[in-house]
Image (cartoon, rainbow, N blue to C red; front, side, top):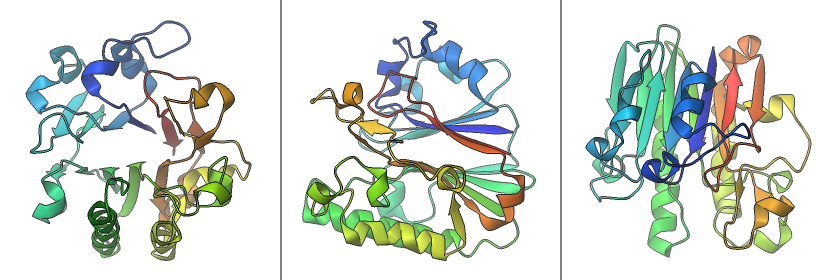
Length: 256
């Protein structure tokens, strides 16, 4: 089974773009990319997502939208019909932004999550930290099945995960107080799947549009698959697809 996660920075925008080096459009790439595809930052109400994407043959489609139009949002395409699907995690202050889709399968739970960005204000930084705390507390209580958490975490975990760590220690996305939340996730029994296979630097998933950072590979690793330790023996690979374009993020995947 292969699962892909991608912050698409607007589902309606990327729908119109060629994303692969062979010229494939987003919809064509999606159909052939994985068994389950999770996207974040759709920036659309479900009915605003192009019909071609909502009705791809062979896939079950689910979406969660923010109450605020044109903001946040998550979506999932799955060849395997889940046992259940839930929007959010039962806390209105977080669920109103459409940041979480929870899918239950036979052997595991899959959480597609768009973690908040804390850069707009002190209040939003607190919101981000509270979101992490509440989410980690909830998934830590799941004992009957393994858990996969994918998405845009909006935090680079360690110095190896961004090009200029020293210059960004006081900037949101790499502040110690944010990085500790990923430590807490690991302490709760989860594994950063990419780092399980790849300990090297220069592996990023987000690049600033304004400075043409992608051309120079000046980036941050913000997109992750954290999985339960119980899945470690089944984990075959974890990849970053930095040659797939269309967003300021690139897709990441796991296979097990």
